[in-house]
Length: 255
Image (cartoon, rainbow, N blue to C red; front, top):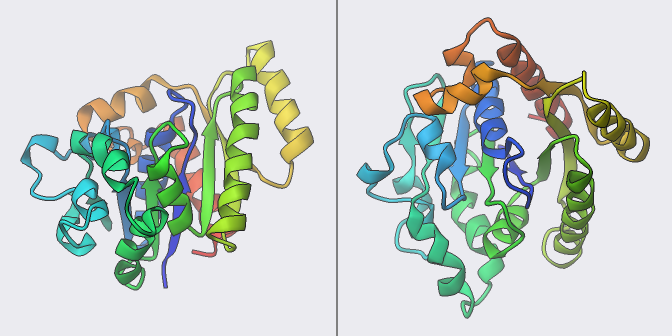
């Protein structure tokens, strides 16, 4: 049975979608069957693997409101062993539509249950918020990966996110664990980056991934071409870093 990992951070611009795409692609290149689930209404993960959001017949939104089953919303990407459940802007209204629904926090878990035997790894890209869609992702997941920048506001946001994870674990999903904290867009020449990294190591040493994703123009460019970094820049430092992160995350998650 496959493992489900949520990539979450309520702070935007931290490389969350980029990390979800590239870790998923890295895992897929090792022979695992991997499903990306785009739960962000912005749909960056969808366009980041080359899928045109205007041509969707079903999306995560349709799955959450029970208009479509999960399998019918899945698309095979052009990349090895990588599938996608895409997102559209309609997803922005899902929280309002679900607010009075029974067991609204478990909609995604129920939808993904039949797919767990088909994939070795399911990666959920969460929206940059701690709303109902993110809660759905956490309830459905075995673990959470937190991509974050080495900035002090990011440290504050991490504390808030981990409080939410603790509450979801207590109320809905006792199996939920923090798989790892992934430092992204790291610039080792900045004193601030070094100081925040040291703080993370001090307080979250067991959960901080050893792999650090460097700041890279190629990593930033790849989504615009609809490709994971492994296909856009096959032999670059960004590719090496994300492949290492994928290996580390899979080991921690037991994939």
